[in-house]
Amino acid sequence: MKYSWLEVFKAGLSGQKQWPAAWPEVSPKAAYDVVIVGGGGHGLATAYYLARDFPGTRVAVVEKGWIGGGNTGRNTTIVRSNYLWDEATNLYEHSLKLWEGLSADLNFNVMFSQRGVYNLGHTLQDMRDIERRVNANMLNGVDAEVVSAAELKERIPILETGKHVRYPVMGASCQPRAGVARHDAVAWGFARAAAKHGVDIIQNCEVQAMDIEAGRIKGLQTSRGYIKADRVGCVTAGHSSVLAAMAGIRLPVESHPLQAFVSEPMKPVLHTVVMSNAVHGYVSQSDKGDLVIGAGIDSYTGYSQRGSPHLLDHCASAMIELFPIFSRVRLNRQWGGIVDVCPDACPIISPIPQVKGLYFNCGWGTGGFKATPGSGNVFAHTIGQDQPHPLALPFHIDRFTTGALIDEHGAAGVAH
Amino acid sequence: MFLIHCPYCGELRDEQEYRYAGEAFIQRPSLDCTDEQWGDYVFNRTNPKGKTVEQWAHAAGCRKLFVVERNNVTNEIYAVRTFESYKEQA
Image 1 (cartoon, rainbow over the protein chains, first blue to last red):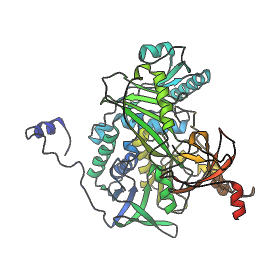
Image 2 (cartoon, each protein chain N blue to C red):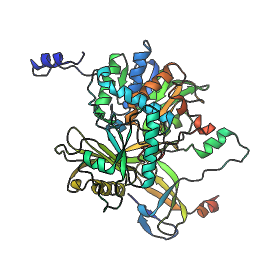
Image 3 (tube, rainbow over the protein chains, first blue to last red):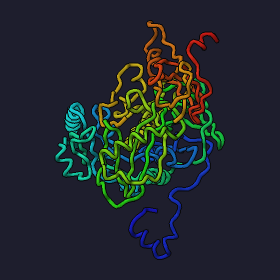
Image 4 (cartoon, rainbow over the protein chains, first blue to last red):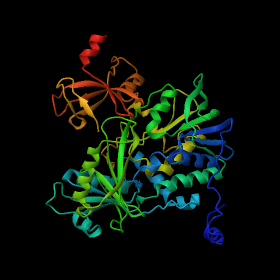
């Protein structure tokens, strides 16, 4: 069924009770051309673009829990493309362009709202870095501007721009086309659109072992039986090293807990997204009205899906200094996700040289959500054509042998 | 948050006093190794789920580096040991 106002009207005649399931519940078949491991946003997007752009390919997504129950449902939903280096900017800008048409493409409202993102500068060096990044963005055709503290106060009146705080705000970069999207809708929209193109979405199906013979992937042993697969794409974020261990390889990633928290719902008070690397925290207000606030990663590695409270304390202090008006806001929930951080803070989108037919899309670290459509799109082409998509080529795993890293740590608006 | 017993100070202290210092016992290959071996040494990590053997430094205390054997899912600490104790064991 194509969602439209007409369908809403028709269903309204019978009390909105006639809606079919968005995608069917299926059991795994014996064999597929491509199995995507991981039913988060990136995995579902990969399956969608594979099925759409390579018709006839039998594709399945296997997910150990439920669709969008991992990091896709745990992030702070920020979408932007204001990175410093060409390789990263091109990849994230490709993604941002896909975001701009995504609701129509998927026939599912992902509530993408281009409300702008501000990255604050608190020191002279911050401001120099911001100017450099804004110039780099403009050269790459990405919208960006430097905003003075006085102008910031005009645009975001509740932001504290005075001089009497510990780290006064000196200015910011702004990307007007950046914004937020509804993260659950992204998972559901991609799942529904992928299923429509014939993708089997198999939930509660955990991969337990990889069947590799003579350097070639043959299939996967899962909690729901053996699945034969010609090609396997692993998109398992924080658990990438666990999957890699099944293939007998190690990856240049380490998993860390990353925390976020939301306040009680309130009337609209913040119309944009504000991030600060220096005092560390980022905040936006969801359509539901709650403030969505992201903290930093724990220094230690872990898979606990809960971080240390001192990071929340640190982030909340920063938020209150930036927005004194939030000081009496009550928080509703706090949670953690597991992020796989690469040494250069850039993802790995790559075939695995040691195992033919095995591909990994991982290492997105703390900022994978914004890349969901772009990541899926270039990864689908990398798997479908068995050669890296031009935009994915710089993110080949070989860069950790050649040394051609894309050093985005601290260089871009990356907040970790 | 968890508490770590510093084997040098002999006290159970807040994790915030310590600095995490990565996977322990990473062996540097000889300098005539291949690029693959060097890349593996510099960048690749085992990153296991479950028991880890890792280095921590008591940054706000004695500043010494030691080894913590921890479950990184439950944050249960199995053992805290000095590097010397592993040498004696070997």
